[in-house]
Image 1: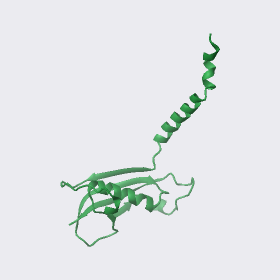
Image 2: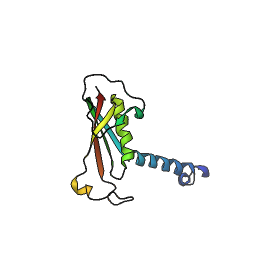
Image 3: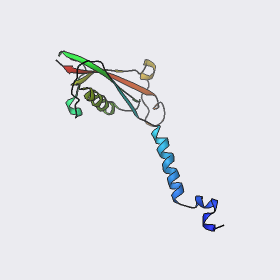
Image 4: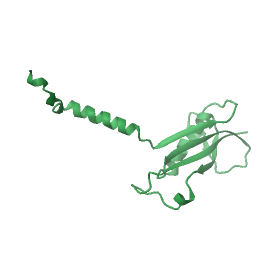
Length: 138
């Protein structure tokens, strides 16, 4: 038998461990997600999608007349900041054609709201869903 093709040589070939490591990390990382983004279009009218999230504003409350065209939600680890979540809400609302997002709600219960999100491990794995109305101005 040719000594170059012994079965134990696969462990000496530097390409095999590199390929194995790459495949392992790819499979492992594909199961890890920081954000889960969803939307529900509740309007029967068509609104052209916005291509820039700067075209979608965030308003806490409004007295201006509007029509709700859907809801958008972002589920993420609780340690993500509002500055990370808001652009995701606006992007998804823009896909529906919304002019703004408003009435943002969080599903964190009163018990978990008492505890500040931890920087490293702690309770950082707990997920929170932010839901907002996607609206167009009348």
